[in-house]
Length: 331
Image (cartoon, rainbow, N blue to C red; front, top):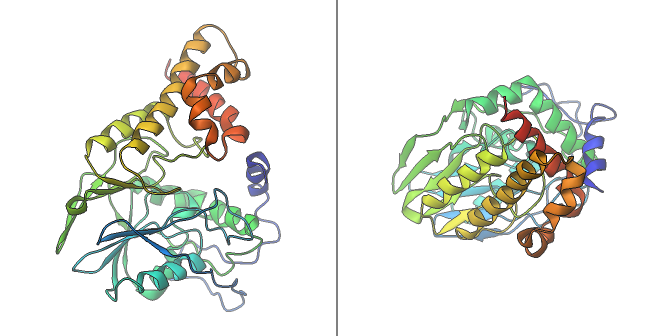
């Protein structure tokens, strides 16, 4: 399915859904809901002795992958397990819990949602069910967005594009706040929580595992042309500079395999090419569709970004979004 069709399909999510969406961590009455089939197991990818994630191989949600298209992660500390993003459904959250138990028998003591897109928080339901009252952290803007409609939107989006594969999922709010700048000590592990401004969204949290030199980047960086509608090119450029400056050996992404600092460099370059060229061509009086072929001639775009999922179908949307950001910067 092309991205344009995928996004259009989200607009009709309220029709024909079988599931539950309720902004209530204590859950709505789900007795009448037929729960979708369990999620198949995805093997654990080990990054260090403490840091792990589940690699999603598909760039978009589908019936075949049960809406599993992002990388939930976790950190094993001497105090317990910290989960970073919970996936697109209660089924994926339950699968993540199963996979955590293949690594450790320690309980989950904290969940962190990096931002308010549904593949990063809809699995909260499984963790609240398994560990009632567990601390689920997110940026205040993430909590506000979920309350204001993002919860219902993303539930419907995943439900429709998985052919009701997330039925039984309840939108479960984070119950604690991280604003960025916090340092959390959990026995043998220190977590630094970073918020470097508007990047993929205005609410992105980056979780640094100090002792392991690992950073969970959420969706601030990816080799994938997906969604900049809630974000900022200029902000992503600055966020990538700051993420690289953390000096981590490993960067775990929301989409795609983990990498070294080259992922920060590639994402920075991608955004610089689009935003800087959009600024230049806008000043020359060009429209976004006139800019696109010129931007595509940039060597980085031809040799690197053109190989990323979504490039052919979505680059034009990125250029138009960059133009809108250039215009906004003038006021």
